[in-house]
Image (cartoon, rainbow, N blue to C red):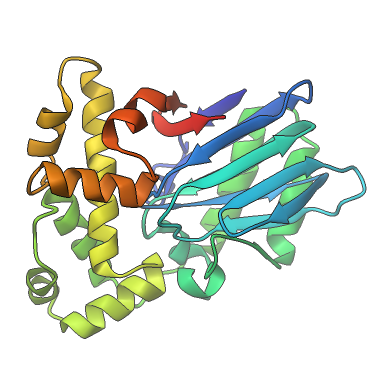
Length: 272
């Protein structure tokens, strides 16, 4: 159903986590929930009509619909994804800061909402080109050639260090991060909102949440939720419960019992 492939280019691996190719014969709708993530996803959609709601997006097979470039914003609640009909769709999963290196606008200007179409002639042409190619390796080659050709540096390079610091320690304070990056907390938060689509504090919550999911998935049934809580920077069980309810609309036990792992990255989704 979904094939996930890592970038071939060693250079791009820092900015793009994976490419995903979804294939559906149309016999049954694909319907699932995604949960807050650190990076972002861009979909190159061909022969597809799209309906957008606050926390739901529908992709509907439509041969009369022009190619579209859809980009996800920094959603902080579960979002529902539904595919109706036949699909052979290509998407790009960017690393947390990655998308900013390929556009002239920062991420929050590109994607202020949960879902939106962006008008971009070159990407639209790329979507057309890869839709005419059957071989997945060739699709990836074409996509990587494009992104290598438009790569640029960003102004707020210190965000790379900030993201690394949070990755190493979700307990670190925003003040400490700002000091280590030689900027004020105000400048740091403004940069997070511009380039990552959320405040530094919200990013820390998502980082802790995703780390807990990875920890639980890797350990399978060998650890209980108390271990997950204590080993992933949650202050106590109440804090653990509160943040999971905020980000999943569910308690941790029900959440872990309902999710499935998608692709080689074991991306957590809940099928409906």
